[in-house]
Amino acid sequence: MLTLESGPARLVVAPERGGRIMALSVDGLDLLVTPDVDDHNFGCFPMVPWAGRVRHGSFDFEGQRYQLPLNNPPHAIHGTARDHPWQEDGEGVISASLEPPWPFGGRVVAALRARTRRLATHDGGARRRRVDARRVRMASLVESQRGSGRAAHGGPGRRRHVRARRGRDPDR
Image (cartoon, rainbow, N blue to C red; front, side):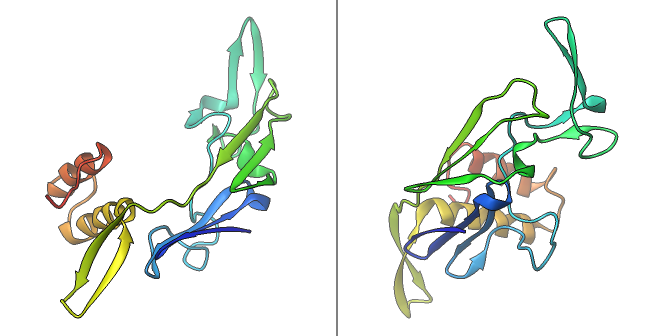
């Protein structure tokens, strides 16, 4: 396990589990689904060497047909790198070789860093703390979707989501 911390933000990555981000938290608040909530669909992982679905796991390239493993039958989804251990290369860098069943080979490298751009916030005026501005934006996004009472695809929660993705503060 690789743990990176910056102020109250904590990132836990498991290279041995396909480079999966196991946890992301700020001040003890988990921002991702944790393994104790769902032991299969938790955290997030690198979708390498492709993101999305390959219909029936097959595709043609330069006149040749390729078949990928059907890891979400009847399709192949989100790459194969998540199914193999990655290695820790030091300084927050993890990597993995792209080997069969991916037919083209290669190597993927992920550089993870914990940086803090700080701003001061207040808890009811009682104490002052420093938090990562990017994490605050992410936490606001989670809270706005939770508090809207609407699905993420419509209503005010959606507009706030789009603003956050464009790098604007959704609470302005």
